[in-house]
Length: 346
Image (cartoon, rainbow, N blue to C red; front, side, top):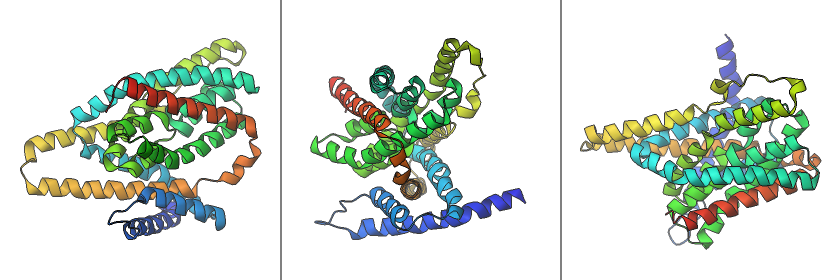
């Protein structure tokens, strides 16, 4: 009974997301310049979602289905994307970016701590904006907040800040990448390293190109795995700093991004499948259908991102957290692209 109720709760919002995703795909194919489709379907999906939210509004009974599409459907899409990569290529891509990721995370956290002091932000708010920018957006903020015992207002401010600059990055990064004539490897590494949320990384990556989208996804998943040890380190640091609150045990099982394992399992299946069935036409056909399905699921998730981007709530946050978030996002973007060129990735 409970399970049926949960399905019924999700269904209306999921149907809306599905319909908008179909419209976005159709619009993508219809908008042509010189025989090419210049506007990505993921960008169209986000814009339609933002437009619906801003001008019509989203009824409360649709929220569950929209959140389901934005989170669960996106994770399924990412897992299916694993079938598009050989396991050795996936590991090599993540490995090449690991040094950049670690350097960017450390520098972003340290500098955000200093910037927060200059702006008069609380230490915990600065940490939340720092981890949201450097690791994986809202997921990192929600995971770190209880470990450092931050206030609810700090969580709200940091989530609003991260969301704003993440959405802006979806539109700005592909333009900058095109102006700099970045290769798919360079752009995918840059997007996967510097953009906040997994959904935002996927959107920007696939807006640039399909190959860049796959690379950005692998790099982002590598970065997301760092969340678990970071939560432990920050929890320990703040517990020692404020011994009066005591130290709560961190549930690593709850915060670990298990869908990452699903992605690499699919990449492993692709490797074995190529070896066993590589000469079978049916194998290539199956992979093609999985790829098409994964891309459509991504478009659905991006509709959810647009529908959940409530910019009106951000007005109450104030300028200081936004200034801190902007500086943190700028640091991540400039530092990561600099390291990409220095290390000659791509």
